[in-house]
Amino acid sequence: MNHSEIAQVKLEEAKTKIKLFGLDYDGTLGDATHKQPQVFELVDKILKKNKSVAFISARAATAIKVLVPPLQELLNKENVSVPSFVAGGNSTTLYEVKKDQLIEIYNHGLEMPQILKAVEIGKKVYANLGITRADLAEKGIETFRKFLLDSWEGYVPAEMIDVCRPADGEFFTEQAKVTFVLPKDKTIHAQLVAELNAELGNELTAAAGDDTYVHMTKKLHEDSKTVAIKTVLKILGFKEDEVATFGDMPLGNDEGLLSFPYSFTNSDEFAGQKQNPDQPPYILLDAELSPVDRVYKAIEFLIF
Image (cartoon, rainbow, N blue to C red; front, side, top):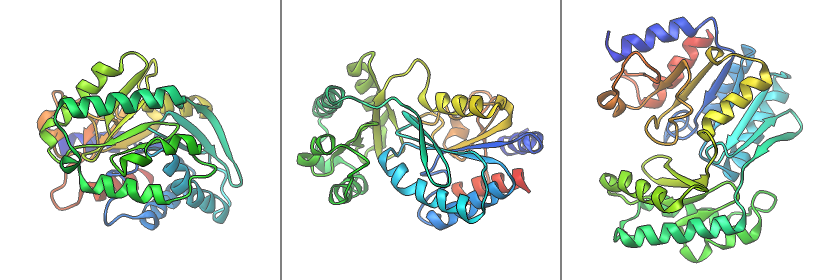
């Protein structure tokens, strides 16, 4: 069987079991044509079927700012009390989202010295590789420059944000993580991440979030996205074959998220790199659909 056929078999197998959806956001649920309204229309369908949702995102403070209010709005509008969760900063933080409150389950955030260390190492590795501002992805710089114009009061301590202000968009500092903009040249991403990890040592770890950003977070005993899903499963009393997880970076920061029995990826590139087609994550391939549309189709198959 090819990748598509195997994925379909696994979706059919999972259909009657799934009680929880563990969802990466950017590149998985959200893209240029799938903005917040489309994402939460899908989430609405999931909640109406009495299934739980856990957003497992690289976004940190922005996850709380952008994902929590519409999720609470849905919980109130539909008057459902299905347990819902948001994990941010590559799951260094995990919250349960209730209709009228946000309950912190854990926070493996960075202390100020760790933020300064990550910034120093990031600058050093970029300099060693000869990467300058002109080499960086413009989209990333533009996003972070916009972030610097926003108010983060109540989300990120001012002294943490202030660390990145002089860089004018080259990197962003917050409690959950330090994020550097990646160079436009994708061929050096793997080397860059490897060199960051070599320098970061035992305390911190780096992972590419997509083609635009590399995130540095506190190193846990296990992959942080795996920890988030396992924690949610434990809270809900569900087994590992009762969650379906979806992500677009199987070789990046979604590797742990996509390690469950019913894990699916929309990454086209992964088809050429996957060693064992019979092991998760299973690849959603469909030439007629965009990568994000494939995820929507798979989720709708599982709930209807």
